[in-house]
Amino acid sequence: MKKIFWFFFFSVVVLFYSCAVLTKSQIKNINAFAVSAESYSNFPSEIIKKRADLVLEEKLIGSILLQPEQIKKSIVKAQENYLLQQQLADTLDLSLQLIQQYASLLRKLSSTGYVENLKNNTDDLNENLGDLVKIANAKLPNKIPPNVGNAITKVIFLIGDKLTKIKQAKALKEFIPIGDTLVKITVKNLVDALSADLPALLASDKEKFINTYTNNIFSNENRVNSTSMSQYLSALNDYDNLELLRQECIGAANKLSIAHSKLNSNIRSKSDIKEIFQETQDLIVSVKDLFKTFRKLSSGEQT
Amino acid sequence: MNKPKNYKNIFMNTEAINTLKQVREGINAIQIQLSDSTLTKKEKSLLGDVLLNLNDLEDIIINNILQDMVDKINSSNALLKKLISDMKASSDKIAKFSNTIKKISDTVGVLSHITAKAMSAGIL
Image (cartoon, rainbow over all chains, first blue to last red; front, side, top):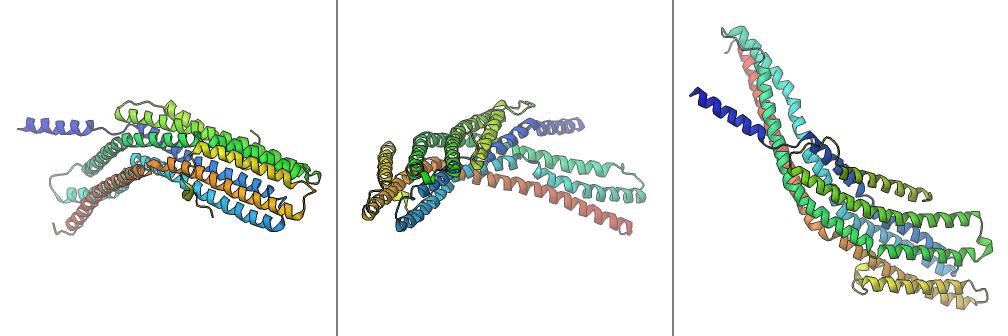
């Protein structure tokens, strides 16, 4: 009878410990992916916002030769259009905000936050059980081993910790494959949208700026000075950087999709790669490049 | 303010880009005309009105292109929202489970504290 009990006891322990939890490297990779995805999501809408800045500047310059009342009207319309395009950029952000939320939930579901809550409790429990054992040993003839309180605390914590981690792994294994399909769809939509008409539009914007500046500033020698020439050069650099930002957004979006696919295939297996996946590293590099180009755009630096 | 959605489907986007090109050529031509110093005030005013109208048309075409772009990017939002909602629910369930274990630990702690007090007071 005793043998059967121990057989069942060990079977339960083996079954319990063989239940899949995430490896440390998987958690590390989920976090690395999530941080990069959250950072990336800020950039695509910046293309529309920065373009709106440049267009507003061009529209103001293009109003110089109008009559005073027409200038006022033109400024009001340029500003209205600027605000509308900022709103459009914010709505473009919606899908990327959802990707951000998804990444943030991946981090939450893989975090140790759930079990840390338990850890905080173990000290109190250990202390209370320790006191009880001391008092019982002082009163009872049969002594209880002094470390029994610590052992009970550990059992409660270990069961709680393990079961929580099993639940976390199960949730991630359920959601990441669904997320993979949706990340792929969102990235494809984003890449298609950024590749279709936008390059032609940005090229046309730059050409229009050159024409507007030539017609309104350079055609009048009184307006040509170091300030106007510097403004012209700075704007041309901004147009080039904007096109670069667009290309880098597409590149990084594709890398985001590839990195998520790697995460998806890895989460199904129990492989324990010590490092961050090459695919995620590529994504991190792409996001860093995006940040550099964005900074150039904000500061008016040359490419 | 222009409402780009009202102008949806007026242009296919390739047509929109070609139309935009023509409108911008028109804007360029008007700007060149406006810098002609021999023009009368009335002629300048008329050209200015044409320029403002072309600017409006340009804005409509561009906002239409951008709105199409936004719609395309956001077409999978409903599915993403559903996934996020499921993930939040799952996260809440795990947090609730963790809290249940915490409560068990609390209860055991309180019980042992009471038992210890009772034993030291000689009740047990």
